[in-house]
Image 1 (tube, rainbow over the protein chains, first blue to last red):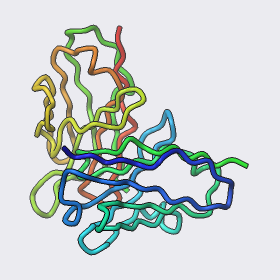
Image 2: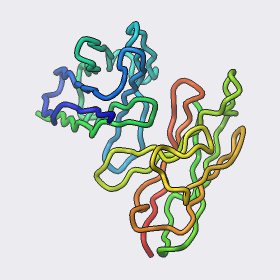
Image 3: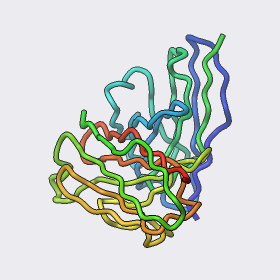
Image 4: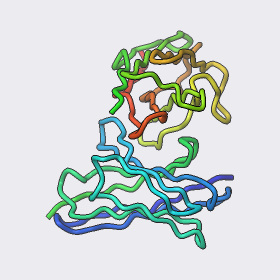
Length: 113
Length: 112
């Protein structure tokens, strides 16, 4: 069955960067798209961007350009999202998902000094 | 960006009741391939979102047929017939026709 396993919760200081992972199994990763989302608890969901694992081609929400960088490692069927220059406004749960049908369990990122 | 307006923001229902949720977009959601990429998700408390309906009216995998989706262009509706306890949570519509993909604010379904 399809599984998306995300990395564990992160506590990071303002100004730092963090790299989140989303390890997949149960489907052909190399010919699929992976999207990433941000959700502040109690609020709706924002689409950050997507990456095609076949060639690494990306599309970003303008709001997150410069903040998020999406990459993939097809050898391990894993997608990554780098978040840079973190502020308290980046504190949220981040999800990976493919085709809106399969979702990771989410990674809580807390930015605090 | 395409604005997705969901109503109502919350619903209080009894088990067995039927309910509808509306989602209206600020632009047509018909893509150049003729398909409409409007989906419905349910986020149960503390869980990841789950796909209920894709492309307006297609049931997601394992989703009971108590759920149905209708609509076209800019006006869409999710109907839940005979609400069950497991249906409680926040429902979101999301459009994937235009970049960036955008979500509605959500409709919280609670027990009366």
